Image 1 (tube, rainbow, N blue to C red):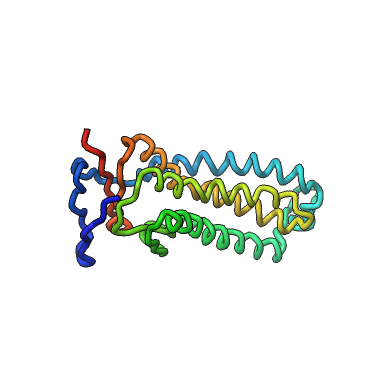
Image 2: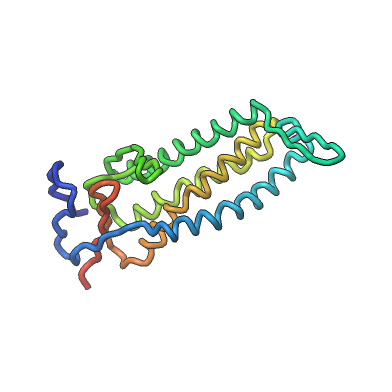
Length: 211
């Protein structure tokens, strides 16, 4: 794999490796990513919500007490359920980035973790290293596949509070993978052997092999 000559004070694109075309800048499309979220969130809510209801049924009333009157229906989220939901969001967010990082580490990359407040996102990144296309595809899709596979059985947990937390985690993990799916879709359209390079959280480049 090509190595990069990186000056830490320089966040611009690296020198083009031998056998590759000049770099093409990669940017996430905000419209496309938000569009994916708009599709994934309701679909996930319906699918996993249906499984949750099938698995838990009336037991959900212990975490969502329902009070009916002649004029209204009130659904209350218990304090325990509220804490479980917040914990699920925090936990799955951390786990999502850790899975990204573990896959990158498996492939031998140095991994940096952080938060980009200006983008409203957490990240696990391999700054200043050329990344193979297939490695990036696996790292990009891994959190969605691994965490959803682990969380889905928890919808059948005998404790409704655990099932609710798993449902919330599934929602956030799946919808939160929109950016990953956009990146994977982009990479799969590049030629085999392409490389990606992240200079910083805002500057990424794709290198296509010379034809």
